[in-house]
Length: 455
Ligand code: ARG
Image (cartoon, rainbow, N blue to C red; front, side, top):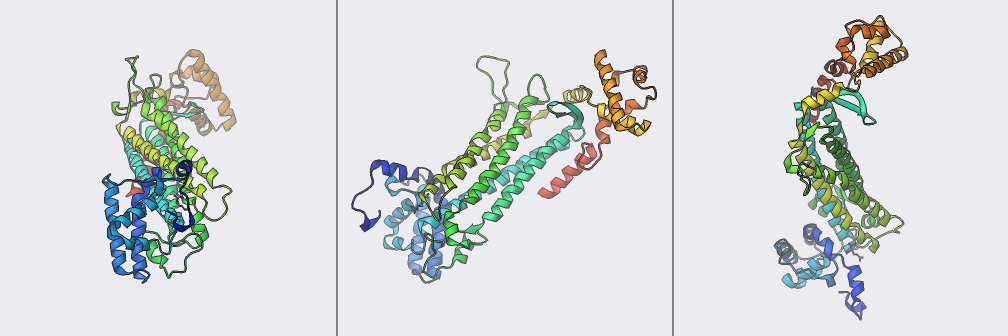
């Protein structure tokens, strides 16, 4: 492959450690797209003839159809996708194929291919997140005023609405969406034409190739262009945070679908049974989504570690950039699709949510606020009085609304029957009208805002 310089071929072990074709064949489409743009630019600049460029561009389409049709024979001896495609092009079109590599190197070629691949995956993630957010909005709209317990420390805290809880995840996944979009804007500079590291003496037109490949502009420094993998790190960082959000939601679905909670029923389509316990319906999809963060964060750490300490410009270390990004992208797309399906199919158990919302003295804060508002008590005193009432209810084995007026007045004589209004969970949630609060009207306003944002 290296012509005159080498007398002997590589050792078999050298070939094995050196070859990337086993995995970088996934970038065949991007490689061919990049080469076709490069050939057209070379001809437009008068660097190669139009007829050579036409032969190259046509031949590359033939190569692509062979690869997509599964008839292409990949060769490990040819190392990577770039050499495999070029060698086959030579077989198909002959001499013009040798002119394709004018004014470029595999270093800018691989950076361009990988960027195109990662950019597609940013769009895949953006689409997956949008679909998931839409599924959450549908759930939120259906249950904007269903009550459920809100938790801190996974202990009952205050009643919230189902819609509010769903919309909390909309906010999280919305930030993920904006992270992928930001990253896409930042990465959209074309490395092609940086050549090996220093640029080229041929009169190439980098603006033309950048534009043909959908980039906003050519990258401004050739050394940086061939040694930069920030775009993949940006993707992985965004993917890691997104996988963390998915993991948190998945954990809630696992808890909510348990016999102890029964907040939701997950559909059979996203559950499995047990081979020994006939009663079991396991939330396997949620559990697997919960786990995906492991390999995605792993990929993020792996690539950061590969890149740290690398001197400018390209080093072969950088060939270790792809496999884990491929794996992370496959798994993020799968996890997003599975979560969307689960959310769409999921049935919230409204009566159970409502029963749970009222238990565990969830309206104690409403009671304390009532004492402040109606009896003009300092909040600290109200907190103390309410604590005594909670203790009384606990001793009687009942919830706060079950206490009689006499019992309430035994703790503080000025309490009157109006207090029962705030002890009910529906009044509790409707009263939380502060911006971003759990009141159904606030939740509906947020749903509307998101629908407009997505439209
Ligand atoms: N297969 C290589 C990679 O993925 C392509 C670039 C090779 N460049 C080089 N100078 N050896 O990084």
